[in-house]
Length: 320
Image (tube, rainbow, N blue to C red; front, side):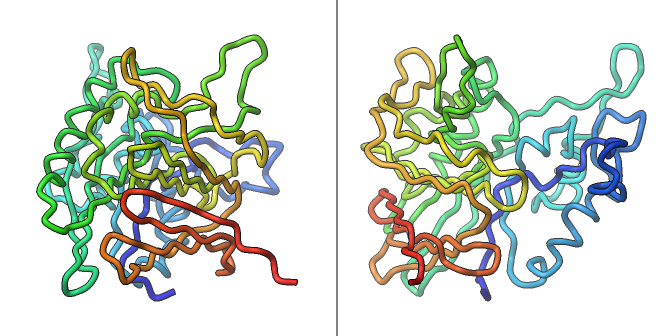
């Protein structure tokens, strides 16, 4: 596709357990974690899961990344900061620490510093990507981590405050408002369809500088429009087990971060639990983009548009 840049929103690493005895035909050659360490990644695992399969794209265009929850410090954070974080001095972010008994323990997962990347779209257009580390946290509750996370969003808002015609996208792993299938509901238990509740709380009131919020985390493609807020695009459909294909009725109420932090109900949403990626092409109008949702063979299965902080998607009719 000859892209000018590639954005990858985390969850690089999935080889976190030894292949079960009963599944040797499927994953018998998969490198298991090294025993006795307080994390699950290894150099062999990164080669097998990331570096070799991503080789064609690594040589094609600059790669802009965030870390996902699979790159928390007790999982694959060491490899992420050694191999993919673009900043100097971060390689030891997830280095194990000595516990009270002297045994090595995983370092805590805390947000690394927010930063921004500017892409020159045309001679007169610049797109600023505010990169927020949302690897840690909870999908289902706004616990103490939301307060730990909030400074990362405050920093991102400052970095994108002075616009002067510049466009801005928030790029982070966990969505700030995206919803899951109702098939995840547990019988007899309250069901909140909105995901990443602590990110909703941490970012509440800080999204007014963005044209788009771009995330992954959920294993599908999704676009959500909350009235008065930038559109949320989710692309977590890159290659692991997809979320269920049904159960995505538009929620009747908006996401809630914490008490007193309630968004309006969504005005529109689009969901596609299928593998793929997206190509974003700037439109002639400033701030406007065309997005083509592609399947693994390059066919277009949906088209989306971003304009004035809003997003809209429509499935592409099949060829007759």
